[in-house]
Length: 343
Image 1 (tube, rainbow, N blue to C red):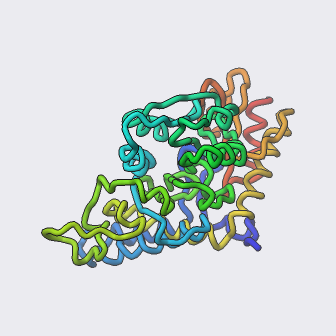
Image 2: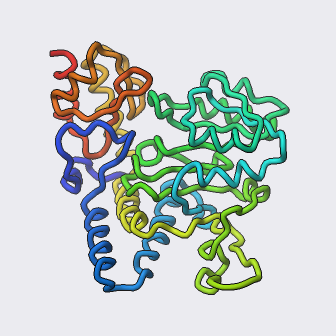
C-alpha cells in the first residue's frame, strides 16, 4: 500500500501551475535541503567528499528497488545517451537496430553512430523486428506526446528473434510501475519524474547485455575496489554493472537519493493513480478521451499564449501543448489550465 498523496504534498513547494514535469521534476524538500547542506559544506571545506558519495550508494539501491532488480545490475551515470553509448559501441559492425521514428534522439543517436538504424512508426515497431534485428530500442513513454509503448508485443517479437531490448524509461520511472528485469537494458535520466538534479541517471544492465559490452568509459569508480583503484595498472574493474559506472556527479546524487527513497516510500502504484487521475481530469474537461498516461498533448487554438497568460507552465511539442502531472500537481492546477484554454 502506498501513502496518501495529499498527506505528503506538503513536502513540495511549487508555484501553482507547474504542468511540465516531462521537462524537469521539482525536488521534494528533503532532497533540496540535503543539497543545500552539501553546497554549504563544499563552500567552506567542512567535510570530505565521502558523505556525498554515500548518497550515490543510496540512490543506486533506491533505483534498484523501484525497478525490481538487484543493485549489482544497476549502473550510475549522468545522461541517457552516455549510458547507451557502451551498449551501442559494443555491437558488431553492421548490426541492425530498430527504433520508433518518433524516438527522442538520446535513444537514437548513440545507435546511429555505431549501427545500421531502421526507424518505423511506434505502432509498427513489433512487426519490424525480424531475424536480422540485433537490438530493438524505444522509450517506454514517448516524450513528445506521452504515448505508452506496446511493450508486450515488442518483447514477444524480440524474444522470437533473439534481439536485445533497450528502453529509455526517463518519461516513465517515477510514475509508471516498471519491472526493469523484462528488458536487457533500461536507462533513465532522473531529473524528470524521479525529481533529482539534472546530472544523475541510472541504468539496468542485464548479465546478458553486459556479456557483450565493453566498458568504454572505465574509471576508478568502476573498479572492483574503488578506493584501491586510484593509481596505476592493472585494469581491475567490478564484475557487475558497476564496471560501467561513471564517477558520480556528487551533488546530483545528494539530491537524488532522498527523492528516490521518498518515491519508494509513497509507492509508484499510488503515484500512478494520482498522476493519471489528474491527466484524465484535464482531458475529460476538454472533451478528450483519457489516455492512461501522465503526459498528454492537446491542440487548442492559441494554447501556448493562453496558458502563459494564466501562469501555467507547460511545453509545446510537435505543435501541440504538452502537459504533465505529478505528485505536487493539484486539481486546482488542472482546473486553472482548463479555464485558460476554454475561457
